Amino acid sequence: MLTLEQLAELANSYPSEANTPVETFSIRNHEFDFNRHPAIMGVVNLSGESWYRESVCLTTEMAIRRARVLRAQGADIVDIGAESTLADADRVEEELQQNRLLPVIRELAREGALISVETYHRRVTEACLNAGASLLNLTGTVGTEEFFRLVSDHDAAVILCFVQGPNVREVDEFDFTRDPVIQMYDYFSRQLDLAARFGVRKVFLDPGLGFYYRNLQDSAHRVRHQIQVFLNSFRIRSLGFPIAHALPHAFEFFGEEVRTAESFFAVLAALGKTDLFRTHEVPKVKAVLDTLNAA
Image (tube, rainbow, N blue to C red):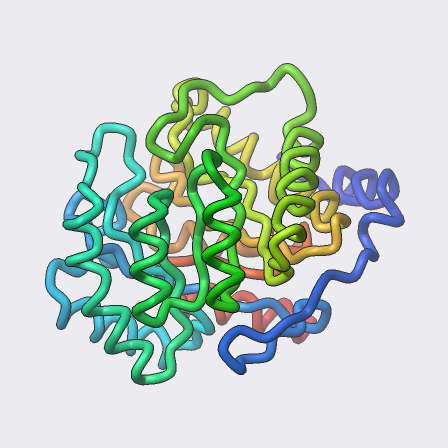
């Protein structure tokens, strides 16, 4: 059971990290000040294999309609993906991903929406940025120089995901031989240096808690890991850049109430000083964050 004493001990162990300010920046004229309040990213999935059924949109029209609803509910950014991250999901060829993504992105960009595209393919990234996407949710670790070059050329932002493998679809087991937060800190530190060489300063750091590592299949073990990373995220944030988190589901614990799971995890993420909340349940998470802000 998580206790107040544990939270106090964590905060007292890292007093300087807890108070580090992070970069503030604008994306397509939308100003973000993460030192004052967090932002929300709503999810649109264009793959029928995506686990969260409420976010799945199988036509362009459905995707555009859902994105409009998410924005009306309070999403600052809409994240769109065309391939499920589930371990046993089919791979989606780059051309098909573009066919699914580009019509949605073009229409939403025309309406002034901030659009993030989730991918680890360079050609998909380039096509989506050309179509009007303003943020790359990078779920791969190979050839990041090329991705940074594209992001810089389009004055876009990037979410750097911590992935132990070449991409989110090619992970094996999570390395628990040392503190996961230190591993993430070291990885992000190297990638931030590389991004800076290309003039990329609009960066979010995502610990990648929703990825399907083989040794994180046990629900209790996975949730313990997720909770610890949520609460320790401020240690990664001390790199000076905002933290993004995809909120998990813990279906084994929440069962029929699984749609409330993300709002529960939002509390833990907020305590760890998360700056961007990626969620399928925008109104629930917004209500949680508004309530915490009033405390």
